[in-house]
Image (cartoon, rainbow, N blue to C red; front, side):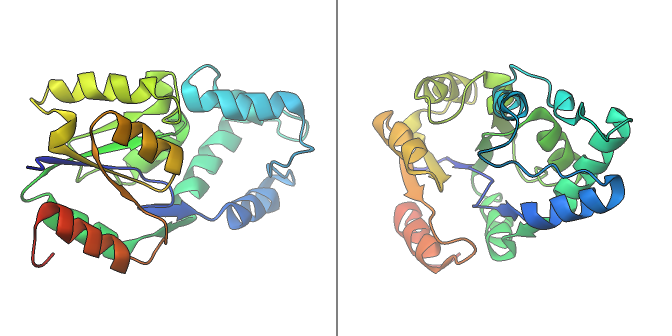
Amino acid sequence: MIKAIIFDFGRVIYKTDWEYLNKEFEEKFNVSIRLTDKSDEELLRIYRESDIGKEDFKLFFHRPGLSNTNEALVYYKKLYFKHKILNKELIQIIKKLKKNYLLFGFTDIKKHHYESNLEGGLYKDFKKVFTSFELGMLKADGLAFDILRKELANYNLKPEDCLFIDDHLPNIENARQRGFKIIHYIDFPNIQHFTSELKSILELSNI
């Protein structure tokens, strides 16, 4: 029987509009922070490694044209939350599920992105949110799910007690291999297929 539901966030609960984020940032500072394959390798490294806590994302704003790194980072964090497309129907379902299930988050995210979401109240319906920057690895690394399994044991939960929801297939496979029930969420923000799977797994007639 499912006792807990674990949600990914990006492209499940929200999507970030990076184009408009960059546009508004550039309008204020006259500096683009858009990343491409041709971007400076050091900036790419900082951006990637900040996801697993190996690098301070603040260093991403140490660049020509940005004289005040702290100001740039604070403004970026505001834009990061502002330019979110929320999956409002799914959020309403989450609020209903909270009444009968323990809800957790498990997300690949930078510390500063996490703080922005936390300050904006995005995690308020979740018992705990497990993050890649704290674990030191992404969910695509199967070891992340071994750590998750140990963390959930503190709540007297086994993998078979938990339903894991994610949009990224390698994460889904890593969870499945370790005994978690899974839903591969693939059609943001449409929830019809997701709702059908959720009802089937939870054995509910209505959500």
